[in-house]
Image (cartoon, rainbow, N blue to C red; front, side, top):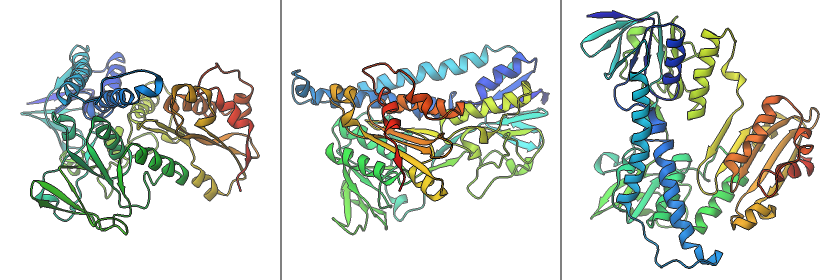
Length: 459
């Protein structure tokens, strides 16, 4: 049986459901295909569940610090993992079912809860049916990478998905990978009460950030009692009684770390290997990401790829922006492109890191004449009042045009405060727009203009 539609959307991540709404309002009959969970990574195994659990971990951490604020709390502070999971599951279910409900109730939208596989460039098999459309939008996301490390097939291990289902607290969680996913879970479970060790192959944490940021994050984690094993060049695994021994072969410390649980947090791969893309003639790169142009078009006319599967970004906000780019070009006559956006991301440890534009390392490599301003959070009244003075602000400015090149805020409220810098960058205005603005006191944001007022040449 073959059914024809104007458009087919594959995958219910952040980009496709909203695009479905725009297409149906434009009068199209669309088919929406999702094989598993509506809402994609963000809603089901990413932002929503992890931030819910981060919130629980923060409460536990603050409860242990209560005496610093003159508040007495019964000691010791413990957590109920079943209750934490139940809270997280409720939040996730509300979001996921909401996405599915909106699609099923959408006029001119036919939902298929099936696995989609291409039959040809514009034919897709869903269950026993074949659906056809001139326009196809792929939004299938990604999943945790599981590299073939020595011994990995001989041990049980966790990923960012399976760790969310734990109802008992790990005695000792060994996290392999010292970047976004690994650090978030490491701090979370340390605050829940687990012993935690982070094993990182590189010489520092979050190696794509500037060295001063990596050093500050290392200090934050060590202060909370997280063990760090850097320069772990030869990572391997083996059973050791009831434990799992993680071989690290570091220059310092024991050559192996015994743990009760192992979390692999070593990157992501796109969910493109079982779509039959070869039958559609859609090109992918050596890592499996779908190759797209500046308007997110693939090499096959009438097929687009949005979200994590196109390799243009690995965040919810980049996925949603992909929707905006496609909708603007197709429906609004507005020629928006991927290169229009300014890079922006956050690391949701506590305190969080918000970063926009170029890093200091990138500015130095560019050779641009630049200015830099740095202000420690210990000199920000709001941070002092909250008792959260770890971290710093850093801003970078083009010395000639006075436009902002980039900024990072590692500190309380940094993931929110960074947006006033990001919006100024989008406006194309010089940094003096911020120094002339009157910000509200007492906030973290009010010290952003002060940081810009104290610029010095980047030597």
